[in-house]
Amino acid sequence: MFKEQAIEKLNKELKEFKSTDNKAKAVKTAVADTLKNFCEQDDEFAQAVVQNDKTLSDCCTNIMKGVGNCISDLDTYKKAVKFYFSTADIKFKMEIDLCGNIDSAEKSGKIINLSLNDLFD
Image (tube, rainbow, N blue to C red; front, side):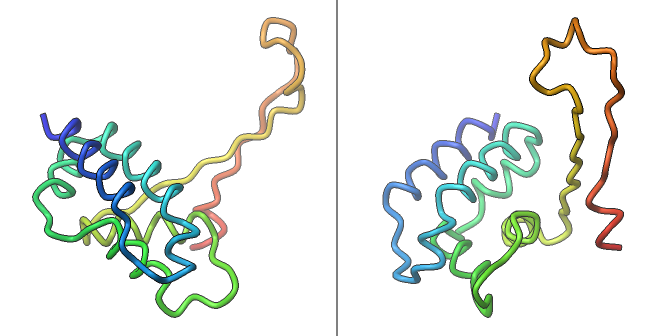
């Protein structure tokens, strides 16, 4: 129910982005896309985005506050999620596919799973 409204809100705020912070501008599209993806995944998160007076501009400015020359994608998205839903967190999982350029039907190798969360604990 709230998913469509949240995505519409984020799309509108992306078009009307107001922050003058260059760092916030640099991450606005990636943050908006990721937040829309999270709204698709969870209606309660989407509801928080819809019913919150905070904007995407506020979110991106908040994320980049105090950041030096770089920030990881994971930290960026964690801050974005917490901006709208303070108790929320994200899980990040990466997989290495040793035969990535071979059709999946032809693969005989194994996939090695790596969770970046293990590295940050």
